[in-house]
Image (cartoon, rainbow, N blue to C red; front, top):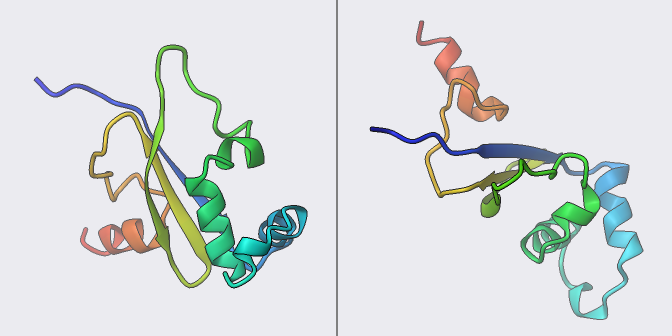
Length: 106
């Protein structure tokens, strides 16, 4: 029997004031060689996602979501959170590179 687990997908648009704000607020000389995108990705891996987006990262009682994957695209960073590292359903994804091909298969 298949069990249901919680998965959450977050798209952070790059090249916006939000992504630039994070880089300006944290002036870390060790990260000066990284691009804005790389700094944003590193901040997510270091646990700052919950500080940046607390209302989105709220969890259901008894469920802990872990960051499993970050994928960089041309215009956004896709963040996959979940209880378990599972493959996401392309049809219900918010990532346009995932769900658009399924629209044309029908």
